[in-house]
Length: 221
Image (cartoon, rainbow, N blue to C red; front, side, top):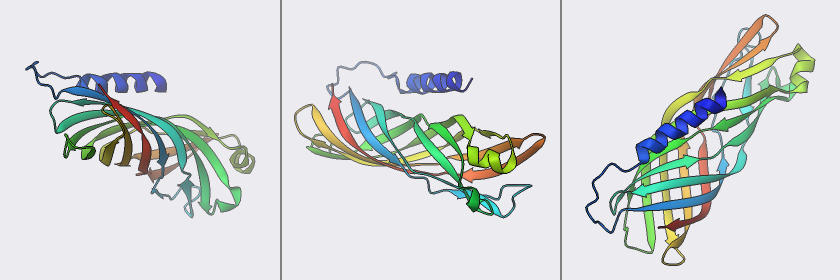
């Protein structure tokens, strides 16, 4: 079910980025593809875990991953970018749960669509700014053996999230079509973590809000 939702989200966002403008013979409309290595760095605010652990909260680890994006440049300055990538994060106990250590892990899939403004489109160095929306899907959540040894068999779930996205970056030419890309994104991601141990259900509100710096290469065609 989670993968079906991810596919539907990606399909819908791709449909949005498909150009609907009439073909006016402009030389400026073109596609850009970039491949990056990113670091997802949560700036999380978490806790408490209620009702059982009001004095506890969690911390979410950083993660490195490849990322792929597709940008349609409708004009010299305006583009729409679809960003795809998935990362795995560990969730550690803090406060009253600090002795337990690792509580769980989860995979995160946040397809993101941004509308960009590109400065100096004819230059060899082309900075841009973007803003848009992300739909974040959490999947393959699993409680750690340390948590289950401490409290018993536990199922972990995280709710999906819809939030805004901010972006800044620059493309630096290495040839007529190829370039190096430096990119930084901020994603507004909020979720509710649910831990079910038998008939007992604990919940924690988590604001992940990661910074996502990346570096990669791209091609225009």
